[in-house]
Length: 435
Ligand code: CMC
Image (cartoon, rainbow, N blue to C red):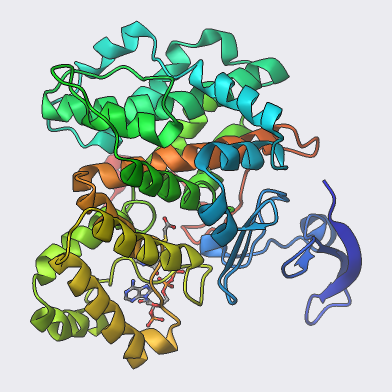
């Protein structure tokens, strides 16, 4: 890894003459970080940062976010340029290998991914164990985790070739797993992948086609899906990526690690927010109800949040939200949807929130999930699949971060400490002597 020591910080324990001088490290961009690894040995103290708001958990060369400026870079390239000019497979290569591919490299990578799009035939039967009304994210957690029971030849994380194959398998198979989760809920036959189609196109094909008739994927929808995948492909050390890294740090196999990431993504504070936004818009129902909803959000201890707003890192407009909003208008126009009440409602909600002192003072802006659900709904995708699509996109980010971690020679098991505030040591008392 390549951060440099550019200074030091001295920590002194008040009331003692004990102090520790700790290195200050600089990466390419972003704030300097204090390397606290010697702190416990030298002063016998830990650091405390619940929620990791001020903690760099690793060194990474993949994604950079400047939350104040609203900047997102994949391997140095602005997300706006990638969303406009690249596509998901090229972005996947970039995230995995660090550079944009040549034509030959891209063709070989795409061939590598498409070779692995089918699932082991036995996995089909695995689906039958789920109830038809299972949430597709539950199916995703289960089936992706079960891949470790099917692909025994790519479980050795110390073998670079096995790591490479596992990465390809995961990226190639998640759309098939996701589409089959959807088909299973619908009671429709599973559609096998079509390798002549591009990644996003093939995913839409497996979601929407049926064997009874020909199905041609709309290029507009394929482009919109591709852009959604690009925008969600990686996002630095977020909750699900950190989960993948923590699971991976124990030496767990890649399929198990990505299943752990999917589980973490499911929550409404993270990837589940796109589903929650649509539920929220449905509950608000009409622009006239917005002031009352905003009052409920602002009420102390109400536990009601404006879903799709706010972010741990962005204290400015999420750059992905800007692109999503634009894509949303484009998709609706292309689909000939002139009047989409949900979009009108979302835009009015955004306008009111952005003028409201509560949201302004807390720097709460729309995030990527605010508009993605409206696009997906217009594309005919049911709400329960929204987070699944996020998981399909993020798999490449998880795999790239996992690979980077395993290949880092300084990698150790992730093992945070705590401030213990439970009872001090005490003696066991027999039940007769209690109460
Ligand atoms: N609606 C209302 N108030 C909010 C919201 C919101 N969406 N988000 C934050 N706040 C308030 C919060 O109540 C707190 O106020 P106070 O200082 O008075 O207690 C303040 O803003 C800071 O909030 P926080 O919970 O400390 O912020 P956080 O960094 O821990 O949480 C977040 C970040 C994304 C979990 C949160 O903003 C949130 O719950 N947003 C809604 C869910 C959402 O849209 N999530 C998607 C995130 S982007 C995609 C992804 O990462 O997967």
